[in-house]
Length: 106
Image (cartoon, rainbow, N blue to C red; front, top):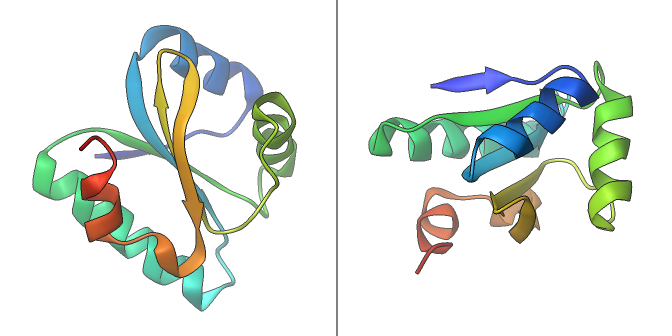
């Protein structure tokens, strides 16, 4: 199941309470982002695991917070794998696929 995260406090709670998770910055106006979101959904559905996302147009402050906190240039779409409160992997655009997401922990 995917859960939309809408503010910095909710994201900080996620970092504090989940040791490992995937997160997606999604643009609701971009066809590349729509494709990445679909791949992100498939990945989580096939593994029966929770995932998290934000919509950049609606929650730019959270998007900026993630970029600044983890010193990673903002892109959209952009996927992250967090482990132990740190970004262990990230990529963007057409590189967000079921295959790349599946290979992250290998």
